[in-house]
Image (tube, rainbow, N blue to C red):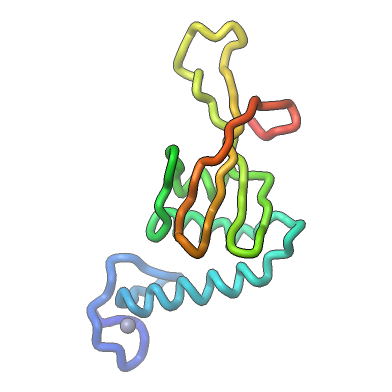
Length: 139
Ligand SMILES: [Zn+2]
């Protein structure tokens, strides 16, 4: 099956974008353009749009390297909070339940909040900090 871009003869890449299949070159181009556009619309003191969060998930899965911990597409898309936009990337936080399957905790399920930093230039997502969970944080 050929790419959905007219006149492109390349075979499709096994991922689709908004209901159509493209070759790897056009797929990457469409993704990058969508990201650039949505990134520039993101106002610094606002949470990112659901569409941008969805793009973060896709980039995490396909392009970014995760360092110092584990992070999934669904978590960055659905569970991340306290986003902070910077010039070359952003930070966000995620609540974790590291003691969820242990019965020794006197407080039941323990929670911590992880802070992650994304460098767009280096395509790296890195766990940079852990702090205790507070009642102001999402569960
Ligand atoms: Zn193509």
